Length: 184
Image (cartoon, rainbow, N blue to C red):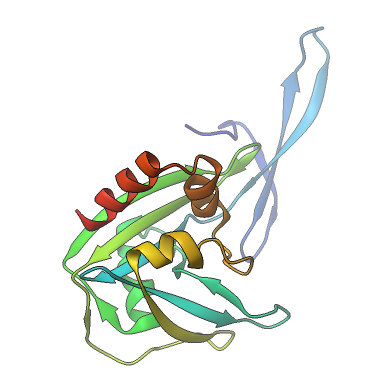
């Protein structure tokens, strides 16, 4: 569902974000100018080999090192699963033929931006990393239970939607269901 109306006008085109404005009728009949942001969708990948989860310790210019999943933003016209496969290969050198869309989060408010989480099962190393000039990525691994209970809980783990799902409703049934989904 589009949160920015079709009649909205793009007033700024940025490298990542575009700003749209439109006149919105209010309940009293007056009109106000509303704004919304649009950006390419983002994918995040949880690669696995057996019950081992691979994640990253990343550094980017002007940021402290952080723990993260592999991923990034989609190119124009690229489907989310294509972005996921490309980003996983570039950032880790891993590939998989066994993909599962774990979740899709839509950023709330006046944003058009979806974040897709994929599990890539049965990964295999097929190449070396091919990182962007602004990326330093160290590949790390953990067993699935440690990943869900320790890595995701680490204050430097950046994937807040995923962290929120795991811990805001933390109970054995929720974790067991998420674990089963990830393992297939």
